[in-house]
Image 1 (tube, helix red, strand yellow):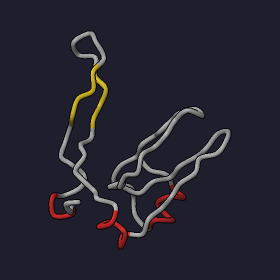
Image 2 (cartoon, helix red, strand yellow; image 1 turned 90 degrees about the vertical axis):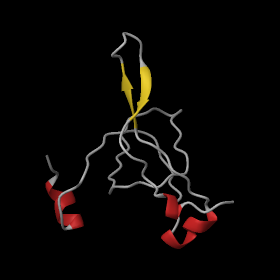
Image 3 (cartoon, helix red, strand yellow; image 1 turned 180 degrees about the vertical axis):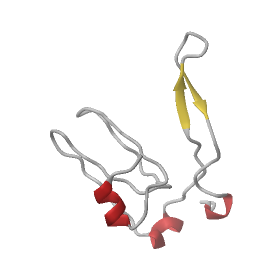
Amino acid sequence: ESIAFVDEALGLKPEAVNLWMGDERALTTCHKDCFENLYGVVRGVKYFTLFPPTSSPLLYPRPYYPRVYSSRTGKWTVEKVGEDCVSPEDTPSP
């Protein structure tokens, strides 16, 4: 439900809790997170490039949709769920 030291650091309980796992081949594309994050590396290194919010117009953000893996049909597929994380007014044209 919650992580005490994260609650204390943020001053509130998290809206969402995610767990991301991968190996040395895992890559993450440039993206905007809608929630606070805590990232742990068990072995090796992970490099992050952080951009200030003022750089957003220069990065050409566009809507993206949360997805889940599902095997409802007996075959694993990726399905869109929920609403996009970036609102249309935050999406400049290139």
